[in-house]
Image (cartoon, rainbow, N blue to C red):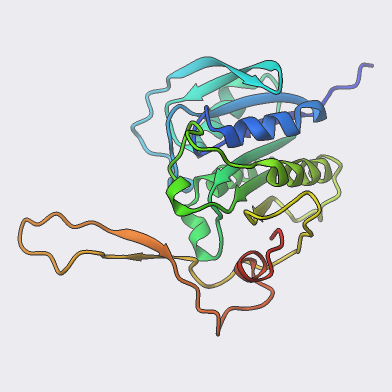
Length: 249
């Protein structure tokens, strides 16, 4: 009987045209059959949300990746909904692995619950499919990029993605690992070591109100910034590994 190649579903909360998604596709191109299903628009911060506004629109697009033209599907929904549509509507067989990323910006500590990158991997796990969520540390000004208007070096993150994808496809992970979250420092190289960590109980990003106390009818904005309490941060945490020791967490 012919050997069936693994089916790998790729998604990205930065959208179908995110260069981080294209970097993953190029990195794992020869590991199996690729199915690309990602939000049609930027969906950062959606978590595992499944908003009712989705209209079921699925558009085919052609993505030029590493000299190959790959078919992709742009979903009018969240990252988690893209996984659902990819698995339940588009795929002709059950995917063996879902890879979400590479994301613009690290997802660390208790802030992972807001991450569309992590949310997509969690959605895969709910369907019984291993999920790999990969994020690259960037300046926060990149966090809402969707088409690569500014250049980012995805090399180290793509290398790590392939390494852990091979491990997950080869059943080299503990049986109780449903989701693997990887965060890559912005100064990493393919030789940068990785460390198994715990999710920090600290928030990595602090949401704050930059405006003065609002008067009646005043528009109020909220913003976010990195704010780490180094004195109480656990050395075995994901935040410590990436932000202090500069290793892949």
